[in-house]
Amino acid sequence: MKHTLLTRLDSKISLIASELDQVQALTLAGLSMSRLWTPFEKWALENKAPKLIEWGMACFNTLWDQINLEQLYGQEFDKYYRYLDKIDGKIERLVDEEIEVEGSIAYPLLEVFSSALCCFYDPKLLPGLQRSSFWSDITVIVGQGAEYIYDTIFSDAGNTNESELIILVEADSRWEAECQRIKDDVAFLKTHFKDKIAIGELKEKYMRMDIFA
Image 1 (cartoon, rainbow, N blue to C red):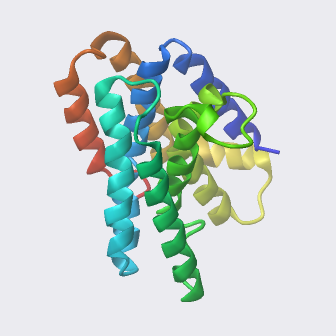
Image 2: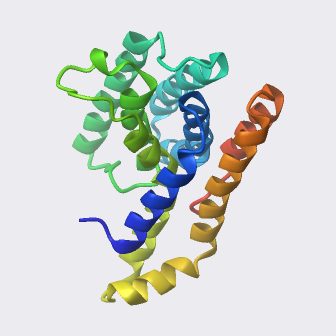
């Protein structure tokens, strides 16, 4: 069961994302994903895993190519899935070397790549998926950065109750800034969705951020 503040976050994201159409929502997901790039790249460099950067960028660019083309369902499913498979293999090898990716600053982007399968591509391509989970996966992707910040504060807080934790999280500048960026992105896309130059500039700005620092 999710903590109260994360449940509230999901509800807020679902509400404001519903003001967008599906193609706009993919762009919102792409912008949120872009803020996870620098932590991912930093972790991969520190752990001498350049292939993770190469394959991660391939996944990242594949999703952004779809966003730029305003396609609801991407046409590069097989290519995207192959790169995810390469990433999974590398993660397994890192675990064998006692390098744990799960819980690291690289993990949120990997979670986004996994969730993207269910909202960037036709659900019929995924065996066992009984229905489209488009909006729930958009919510997961958009909230991934804030959720990681929450988890970090929770881990550092030690023995504290949830009410005290909520106070700590809401006072944290990283959490506050990321929640505000989500709201700002929705407002931006409602008025500037056709401005591809502005979207590209915002994407590049976000890719240079370390929102977990």
